[in-house]
Length: 595
Ligand SMILES: Cc1cc2nc3c(=O)[nH]c(=O)nc-3n(C[C@H](O)[C@H](O)[C@H](O)COP(=O)(O)OP(=O)(O)OC[C@H]3O[C@@H](n4cnc5c(N)ncnc54)[C@H](O)[C@@H]3O)c2cc1C
Ligand SMILES: *[C@@H]1O[C@H](CO)[C@@H](O)[C@H](O)[C@H]1NC(C)=O
Ligand SMILES: *[C@@H]1O[C@H](CO)[C@@H](O)[C@H](O)[C@H]1NC(C)=O
Ligand SMILES: *[C@@H]1O[C@H](CO)[C@@H](O)[C@H](O)[C@H]1NC(C)=O
Ligand SMILES: *[C@@H]1O[C@H](CO)[C@@H](O)[C@H](O)[C@H]1NC(C)=O
Ligand SMILES: *[C@@H]1O[C@H](CO)[C@@H](O)[C@H](O)[C@H]1NC(C)=O
Ligand SMILES: *[C@@H]1O[C@H](CO)[C@@H](O)[C@H](O)[C@H]1NC(C)=O
Ligand SMILES: *[C@@H]1O[C@H](CO)[C@@H](O)[C@H](O)[C@H]1NC(C)=O
Ligand SMILES: *[C@@H]1O[C@H](CO)[C@@H](O)[C@H](O)[C@H]1NC(C)=O
Image (cartoon, rainbow, N blue to C red):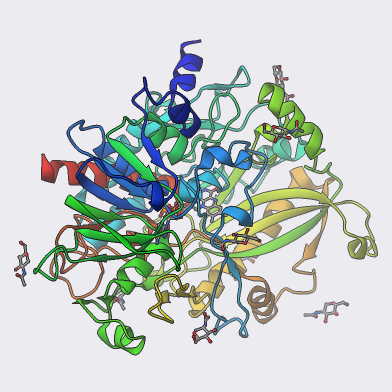
């Protein structure tokens, strides 16, 4: 009951509008024309996404500080699909990016989804909550010189931010998580999959961990978030006890007071120097659209750029912070010459695999499910997926990468096998020998060493940057993907799946040699859209990297970046929990500097 009252009292955009006179919710402006600032802002946050709203909320906990968030997209409250775990909001709230033609994929390009809405990708993502490994965070501390990133320091912060729910739909989830690594009283709601999801696949998968000969590669893992993510465990998701998505917009911004202001539907065109000092970037320029007048707002203390892995380098480059020759080539005057801005962009590489099964599908009647969700917040649409687990694998010992091992250490996986769905066969598949269903699995290289870039094609602030994720530029990235496909084949050849998974569909059974697998990989690989690194953090005084360990853009004052772009290498898992963690850490760092 208390929980429900507390949830009801969480501010939302509508709530703030209705009760603006007698609540302390964040204050919203719908459009730059409505923006009539009555205060001087201490901090201006450019980008109201996953990280931006964490930082704005935490800084706003100091009632003396006034915060302005500028977000290009609309409020999440207005978009029904952001609330229902079984729905995914579509292109109407997406930037609809496309990558450049990929040099190592025969010139193929691909879509690169990024949310354009309050809450950023946390309002539209798959809700999987995985923190990466202890090895990842300790390596990031080494690479960046930021000691706050050590696992032993970041874990308590991630737990502080977390509101783990031990029961969902009134069903306890004991045996599916380790209570010592979860926080119960934070902001972001997290649960593991509910008991009610009953596809027999889920039980068979857990049985594999007890099959003879399988346990080395596929042990049971009680908690995916304890720092050593190897094995098969229950998948946690960012959702509330009552079947709703939890995002940085609902869980963080929703708890702020009226010292936090939000300007929606407004695009940040650039940051610029506040006065004569050309490296003191405390002014933010914005506009509703290319035709509208540009408006400026000054931060008394700092500007925090949080536009995400594409938006943030775009803002810096358009402001004249980047590699001089490249900026000059598109007619932008260089204010801070830093060749690292937009470089070292990387992402997980994903290749799909399909298996012929006799298992029931995970499909359901979506209209009936939404009607049920509308009434009770239960039923099949109250889950983000109906296959309940995550599988993380290290390369078998006989595949030695030696010094080239791209993981942070032996307790980290090279591979994720992500269980997507079980679907009816499509007509062209029915031509083959079986008429069963199709199990779809994403096999993922979690640690590619290829590096891409975000660069400008034009000085027009509204034009999209060139997004080159540069997949498979390095041979080592193939090795891991080949083994990912082979690992998936071993998993589904386990005794427990003997009577339910009958054959491989893709890659086809005759595609087995390294060369054949490589051709398959090249034709199917896509970015998994867990991009990082385009504004990598590096130690003070180094000649590479875009931001310092205190998140400050190198060579500037009053300007920081806090989002996925500062992470130097991909995580051993999905990215959002990592972003929540680093944003909590950045908030403490920034608050401490201004206390
Ligand atoms: C389709 C999809 C599914 C995913 N699924 C998962 C998952 O299940 N689990 C997981 O852990 N991770 C997942 N991820 C990744 C994860 O959500 C992201 O890594 C993370 O949320 C990024 O956070 P961020 O703060 O860096 O950026 P974002 O959350 O993208 O925030 C950036 C914000 O800045 C705004 N912005 C950008 N440029 C401007 C500008 N010039 N002016 C004003 N505003 C601007 C954007 O509109 C956006 O709101 C998924 C990502 C995608 C795209
Ligand atoms: C993305 O495409 C959809 C239509 O498919 C459109 O509604 C939306 O406005 C587009 N996003 C942007 C930022 O242009
Ligand atoms: C700008 O300000 C910073 C910090 O106050 C100072 O270190 C720097 O020297 C100044 N630069 C110029 C050109 O005055
Ligand atoms: C990319 O990162 C590596 C490793 O930190 C660094 O050596 C290199 O200089 C970076 N590249 C650029 C263009 O900054
Ligand atoms: C569920 O509720 C939403 C939002 O109120 C509404 O738009 C939708 O039509 C409803 N769907 C069903 C099937 O009841
Ligand atoms: C889940 O189980 C609970 C308790 O048995 C029940 O009330 C609820 O309706 C079930 N939900 C679904 C989707 O079956
Ligand atoms: C490596 O070991 C796996 C079993 O763990 C085996 O299936 C595979 O054939 C071996 N590969 C090589 C190259 O020896
Ligand atoms: C880059 O700019 C040129 C000239 O303006 C344009 O023709 C081209 O389509 C742009 N490329 C991309 C990928 O946007
Ligand atoms: C595999 O078999 C299919 C169908 O018989 C054939 O078209 C394809 O060329 C074969 N591939 C290889 C790598 O042998």
